Length: 231
Image (cartoon, rainbow, N blue to C red; front, top):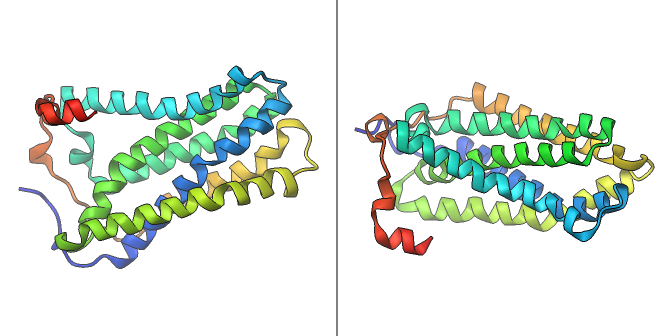
């Protein structure tokens, strides 16, 4: 049986989760700011500048494949450790990816920036795996779709205002910084935000939903042909 508290309303937990949706929407579109900026700093051609998107979104694919492989061999990790711990790990990995921007700027290495983006993408992958179902179960089952829609709405808000704020931070506020140094302070700030959110979620009494009985190995949902063809 699923180990979970009564389906009462967890307003504070859902507010924290909604801000998390906003943050990863905000951070995702910053790639659109980084492409022209890095293109100028490192004198990249169009193909090499597109490696920014490839590194970030490639992490989604690779992270999902790794997660799937672990699930097949050992059972779903999120079901075993709980959604809260999954989100905490996602936040810590995202903070690490953001922190790596600082040494990348110090050494002025484009490959280092791509590695930082890849780690950041891995963190976001784990966040999405854990946070989407977590939002659905934070309250009555009949309003699960409404909670998901609201959380995704804040994610869209983040993608809308992200380029405006990100462009202001990198080009305007830190425009006097030379070369790749302009991304140091913004991404240090983002790392601090992720760490604060991880600390807040760790200290806040949030429901620890787990489902150990469903943590079985195998191909699970891929046994359904409709899902496979839909992918």
